[in-house]
Image: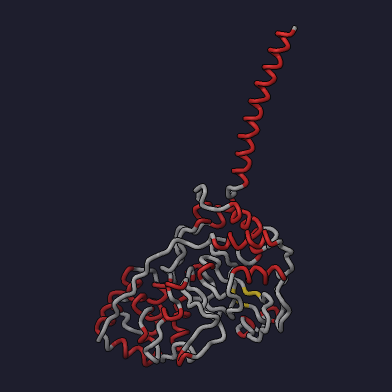
Length: 349
């Protein structure tokens, strides 16, 4: 009896030990599943394989080269001092690190410089969406008096007088010459090459272990859930391409309302991408906040009443300090790998 009891107890002990091992494995598997992206997340947030192209402006190496030269050339401005890259600096997240842009004559503008990262994926250009294509947007700041203050009618003969540009335009757009159209198309072709690179978040989506902290993964869940960020910042580019009044203080800028005078669009501005967002402070269309923590605090408070119509998505979130910290950690995980950008040697007369 004692021997039998010993055997049964020993077997029970062996089974119990084995079950503990199984429970540990199952626990590890369950934890791994929690820390892994869902199939839906992978489908929604990984970048599409192809970059959208402009109608009648399919990218070629010659068009990109010409556009890059024009983008970095200060001679496109009336002062011969400001280039597109002056405000859209690749070293500063393709923005300028200023609350609001500095334009012609060192004048301070009333809106911040948005990054041009992933503009190829946007349906609207500029904070108020006044342009539907990059080709049209590229010409806007050149002629704007407060920005580059250059008449295109004067710019064209200036470029025609530079043999290097004549050759570059002919190679890029054979037989089309130097015109408003080819200038806009070339700059747009270059801007479509400025796309986000793989971030820790992307590598996590692709199944690479250990690249995302548990805090950042938790932040992603808060981003999709309690914080309701995906109401506007969704999909690969983290933008709905829409316009929203997010309740900023001291708001007099009408935003999208000046383009489409509909009450709900008063004080509404385009939803920016969150790709590389850690590199593009100050934030908001008016540079209201200097840090991601301040931005999260703004949304956590549900925004503030202003002269416009507050977006229905703006509600108090009641996030804890730990949850806000996790959300910021996730936003920082969207920073892509650095890309070396070589400034071109510009054509001379």
